[in-house]
Amino acid sequence: MAAIQFRLLKQDGAARLGSLTTPHGLIETPIFMPVGTQATVKAMTPEELDAIGARIILANTYHLYIRPGHELIRRLGGLHRFMHWDRPILTDSGGFQVFSLNELRKISEEGVRFQSHLDGSYHTIRPEDAVAIQEALGSDIAMCFDECTPYPATHDYARRSMELTTRWARRCKDARRREDQALFGIVQGGMYRDLRERSAAELVEIGFDGYAVGGLSVGEEKEHMYGVMEWTAPLLPADQPRYVMGIGTPEDLVEAVWRGFDMFDCVMPTRNARNGMLFTSFGRLNIKGAAYAEDQGPVDPACGCYVCRNYSRAYLRHLYRSGEILASRLNTYHNLAYYLDLMAQIRAAIAEGRFDFFRREFYARRETQ
Image (cartoon, rainbow, N blue to C red; front, side, top):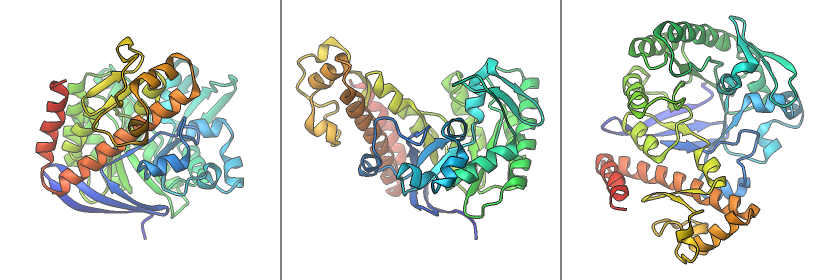
């Protein structure tokens, strides 16, 4: 029996409504996964995440390998127990974090040798190691180790990078030992259609529990991002989950669902919250602005979250400008509540066969403000 089971419940155009059963519970898709890089979604307790509708979170292999160590987490009962989260967890393999180290890493056929961003110590992660670390963590869904192709990249570089990712994917599948943990392959190939098509075909031939599109949100223009998603979605199995890694504006999520994807993650709602940028049904709101100094209204009149029911823009601005920890707490709560509610609205629209109308209305609300 597979570690996860995906059911496609309804399709509205390319948009898909589904359910994903994992060892730690069922997830309705499309779904947004809050990012808990170091076994915590910054500023949020697990109980708060549950209250706003988070059903799966993402943690990161690289960061947990560096600190506190995957073997320690294994000894303490695995990631779910360690962080007091009994719902599903997806672990990113660490490929993107290693990519981000840039001058601190060296890529070879064997794997990646890099220096820790904490103390400069040298480490090597091979595809086999990435799988072993994720198995020690005990996530419900693990990701293959890949090379995240930078942007811009020549066709030749993107091809070699994609081919390496495919070879690593085979090694990841061969290395897996846990039957209760799903493994997703990652489609690479830069912004080149022929490479994306080849990558998808080769990964499907290897065979994984789900498929992700990587190498997006790395500086490319939106038209390139949306083009890659549009080319790639039809190439992936309809009866398995499709995941776009690291994309994050509300507009990106709507466009990805419209093109047939099911799962998403991004640090944007949490990181922007800590910088005073709030997401609303009418667009972004910079709570630092002087215009909100005496504004008694909620962040978003259309939002029913705890923050919008109880706190004014004036108070949130005061907290932020005063450097209070509560500013990060309340801003993050609102942003994640908005993202998760957006996904709930998207699921309802697909279920009712009106996603195209929902998409038009989504943009119309932004244009009238």
